[in-house]
Length: 510
Ligand code: C2O
Ligand code: CU
Ligand code: CU
Image (cartoon, rainbow, N blue to C red):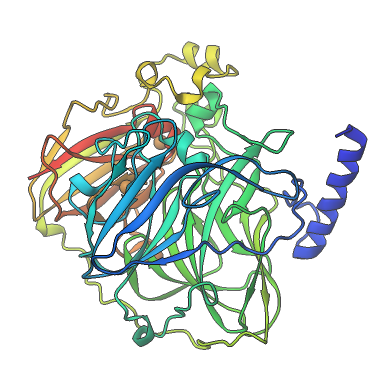
């Protein structure tokens, strides 16, 4: 495309995008892919039933991200991303996970509380052409979870390419709770990501050393794989299941018109009551369910501010403290067009949801500290020397690249770092070195006791499996699912570049 034409086209799209979403000039809607305002893609819903096999196929495909041609992509039983799988508590679902990629993979059920042999971590490898058949027994509170590959050293590239999907664990009680529950109508999945595209429209993942250090961020925002989509919604209360499936970016969510929204659930279950907010930071791998009232019939835009935790500032590199919150215009993620023709099933906010007691600190049988080290064993000269360089192999050369770690040690498949006792709780203290890290662990959920010296905000007071740690935090972790030493669970930073480069450890639960 000649430069002059592309400039005109881009400018035109920016103008039309800004008009369509009605936000202040200065915001730069990333609609340059020529998509205009596509309808929000709603992933296929798979309703799992006890005993009936559910097949998920990890495959290469082609996908159109905008108005341009289809480009190479990957997806899970789809051309890009995956279906939404809804499972019922109490059921046992036999999955068939088919690997039709030309490389090894795994499929991890992020947020499902299952024994480690079914967890889909780096030990549960699926060779190209092979099928993995975990039996998933759903014995946990209702929650929005997700699934994504987790192969040793190659997670970031596989997830970035499109391998991620959402799972809904339901107990059938949402009618009694007064929550919207019609999938695709007033109960919508929103998978938030950021990507870079090459000039020909292809997805680009060529991390530089700085991208590995800070985590790979894109310049284009996508929701359910679409750029700047619009969702038709009923003019009532709508439930949005937010999943941050970006490799590294934190989204700083708000509505362009500053309308309030109400958080009803965090990563691993419902809050006691809706929490009213006007701004919400969602870290990589976190989930929040929010209710939004569209009964005024006005269109609304869900936007994000700049990542408040992007990168390590020069001061941070020197260990002299944290960079300031970044300021800048909000960028639109997804627009909502209330349609009076759609029946609004819910018009009032629910009052009570869960019945959580406050965490019982005295139940803890151990205290452990985990320091997340992004620059292990590298001097400043090393970092500066490699600053602009491109990393060969796209993160594929994992053996050589374990430059990050936890407590001074890079990840090893052959070392169990921690052993917890089944049926107990422990306090884990997480310390972030140099920048904010989203810490996650498998096969267990936790309550936040403190983060940066403060009690958790109300929207983070429930059960969780990811915590964004800026400085230091304490969590109370409950270990109810077994992991023998030969097949441990993982704990790691969910900046996928950090995870792949060694910021991960293993724990057994016996
Ligand atoms: Cu979302 Cu260890 O993963
Ligand atoms: Cu996980
Ligand atoms: Cu990290």
